[in-house]
Length: 229
Image 1 (cartoon, rainbow, N blue to C red):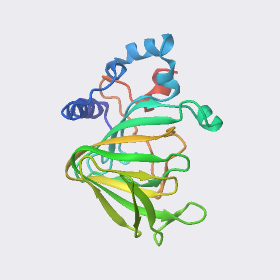
Image 2 (image 1 turned 30 degrees about the horizontal axis):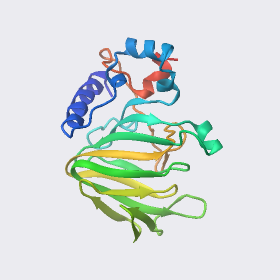
Image 3 (image 1 turned 135 degrees about the vertical axis):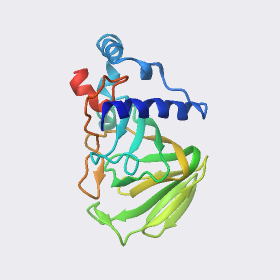
Image 4 (image 1 turned 180 degrees about the vertical axis):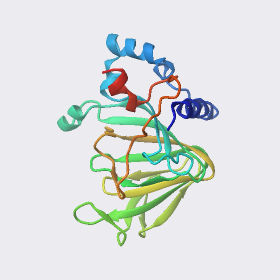
């Protein structure tokens, strides 16, 4: 993805999020230089816990068809998770555009509530796992949708209207997209690790490769190693 496109998506996404009354935390609007200064002074957790902007085309260069906007608002640590106490949770705000696919994947550690915060219908295609945790097209899933336990056949496409949510557990394979319009999505989960805990059915990248055609307006979490470390 070109950096100019990333900058454009950031501005569009921020406007879309604000249209639903959700406002980003202050560090979201730091310039690269201001973010670096904050991390080096009193905000090292932004880097350590990978808080911030995340725009991906899964390395395929087709963002409109295959992609996702995310912002990690808060995130605990793997150390706390291993101890079973402390900050064991994470929160993201995301945008799935109309007919924009987030490909089939699962998590080994993370359980997550996926919440339609507004816009179109969020469609989630669901499959279960075999005994080793691998994708199994013959297995369905049992999920909670706002407290209601539902047994779903393999390949069920669950539609979530604004205000509705689903709880996905490790081993629940899922792909999703917006239907009828762009969708603002909330995610509340156990500690999030996008470096190791995204298992895709097809061999695909988690992060976009950025072509630096202009200067970044804000850094992505995938920029942190280069810009902040």
